Each structure stands twice: as C-alpha cells, then as structure tokens.
Image 1 (spheres, one colour):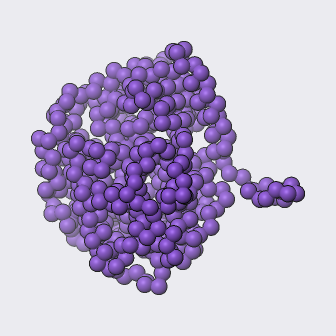
Image 2 (cartoon, rainbow, N blue to C red; image 1 turned 120 degrees about the vertical axis):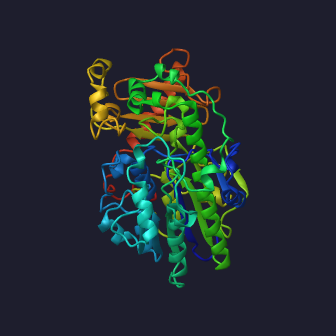
Length: 493
C-alpha cells in the first residue's frame, strides 16, 4: 500500500448492464477510456448488487449494509437514516474533502450538509431545479420534462458540452481544481445515464445506428415457468407497444449514452494526469444495477433478481496501491464491499456493523478469493398477489391512474418478499409464499429455464436454501454490540 492516502473517485452509472463495455467483450459498445482503466486495474467478472433498484442499491453502496439494516426497500423509502454511518461521512471525518456531483437519490438536504463539502445535483431531467446553473441547464431541463414516459427520443437537440453527462463532469473538474491541496478528496461522480429516458445528443445518438441487429422481440415465453409477478410486470409495461425496430433503436441510443459517459471519464483522467494526481487516485467504476433491453420480453427494470439486473460492471484502479492488470473471474464481490474497501485504503476505521468485506487483500494480491456466493433481496410487506386477485384488476383503469401503468414498480409486483443466493454455477430465488426459481447458470446463463421444484435438483435446492437461511439470519438488522467481555484466552472479534 502507498504511504499516502489516495484520493478516491467513485464513478457510478445508473442502470448499466454488466457487460455493456468493450473490456467486458461487448461486440458493439466502444469504451476506450474505461477499457484503459480496466487494463491498468482489476476488473471483476462477478460483481453484484443486493437489490437492483436505484435508491436501495445506492443505500447499500453508501452504508456497506443490506436493506435489512439501512431500511430502504423502494425508491420511495428515503432518505437514509441520520444515525447510520455513510461512506462520505466516514471519509469526511477522516480528513477527506467530499464532493457529490450528479445523481443523489438517497440523501436529504440535512444529510448532504452533514456528509458532503460540495454538491451539484443532476437527475434524469437535467440539473435539478432550484440549484445554481446556466441558461443551457434550464433549456435541457425544459426539454427533458416528461420524457420518461416516452419509449425513446431520437436525439437530444443540444451540443454535448451543454448536456447532463458533460455538465456533471465540468462540476467534478471544478471541485478537484478548487480543492484544498492539504487534504485528499473523495468524489462521487454519479451519472444518471444510461437510465431512461432513452435519449442522447449527437454524435452519440447516431454512433451505433445500423450497428445493432434488429432481432425479433423476446415474447417473454420463459416467464410462464416463473412466479406470477413477472408476467404481471410484462402486462404493466405494455410491451406489445414495442416493435423490433423500437428495441433496436433503444439499444443504439443506450450504447451511445455509455460512450458519452466514457468520453467524459477520459476528460477526467486526462485532467488528473495533468494535475499530477492520477497515480495516487483510487478509481472505482460500477453501476447501481442493470437493464433488460428486451431480455425476458421486458424493458427497463422490475422486481426481479435475474443477472441482467443484479450483475454489474466493477473496475478498481489505484496505480500506487493496487496490483493491476488482472481480471478476477473465480471469486465474487458485492456492492456492500466498496465502503469497507475504500475506508481500508483511506486508513479509516471500518464500523463494526458493516456487512460488506474489504476487497483490499484481493486487490493488492495477498489473496485470490473473496466470496464464493452473493445474495440479494427484494419486495415489500405482505403476501404476493394471487392469480385470482390479479384477474380482478382493471388494467385499463390502472394504466390511466397517475401511479398505475406509468409506474410498473407498484404494489401488484412489489408486494411480497423474495431472496436470492447465487454461486458461480447456480442461482436460487425463494419467495415468501413458497414459490421459487432455480437456474443452472453454466448451462443456462440467460436464466430462462426454471428448474425449481422439478425434483431433478432437490439436493442443490436444499443446500442453497440452507445457505440462504443462514445469510438471512446474518443479514438481520444490526443490534448494539454484545457488551460482555470475551471468554478468557479468546480475543475480541
């Protein structure tokens, strides 16, 4: 480890598929700047989020804990609890300057004042209203109003330098250049893309035109073997509205959004090199969750724990403190591991309640393993709706309701909890009404054939279910530490 504490840049994209990068072998997407970071650092083939939904996922990242502890299960259950230590709060207490540039989605005003030295907020509608900004920021915000309900928009009518992705990077560079040179800094560079609305400026809107195959839309036939909520989700999404050409164009725009982000990361890295800050800056690049893009006959995201949503890209680089040039494919990591990793590198104490594990021994080459399984959770209180109950729903009225068809993360599909255990070879998803999903990931990486309850893999089901039960007990809400001293001869642990 380097003698000096590193500056830290945590780059988070929103709703980016795990393999939608050149360095992950994508046949179309071009991301030369992220590819270069991956070549210099450590790229994880198996990184996951505990819940593939924006706010809960960000809470896991910023607290190092599962939703059972931080309590955020939906996008509406915000903000973070004031008594729960956060990554920026811990780093600020350790002497770091802390900068939040881009999408927040978990802190309220009091939390931002407590944990962040400098903030510039941008969301899917551009720079947030009420914050300082330019006339171009206001124009972008006016254009993006209500775009979320549109299937896609061909191009954003502004030059790249006026658009959200570039403006966030501008704010990040300004914060770095105006930093106190006597303190290290922590930058959360939080891009709202490639999350919908599916729109991007030129030249990115045309960058992949006619480069994406117009495959027939997935009819969602694999959903017949899965729990009811997934078929209800497809109905709520009204997927019949999307043609093969629509889905092809959405993918083209989505890839363009990723390349726009990549170019801005290139700007950031270049400036850090010019300021002689690059070598002692630790970079983490990741996403908060994935995106269907037509897989399983679905689009965007929904309450599920399939890999297309829970698996994320993860690249970690620190030129002075990380043994780079590696691809980690035989062990697994979770987003809750990022907070203890960065606190470890910063020389700060790691709070005892943290449920993640520091990746530092793996990153600096001291060990080759980290996790042999990862876990996830989703859903809200109550039992899932039954088929008889769903048959009584007036979907036409629901589509017209402001909180109905325009938002498919509603009670019809959110109610009822379910848990996931994933190893390199198998995945089990267990629901609180006794339903389940089981996938042989070696033979079926797309998770299309549900083997749960078929009898052929009863022993695999039993072993995974026992392990999942142990995890659910370990992930229970953290309680104050047991106050009695350890037995004589045993150290505190």
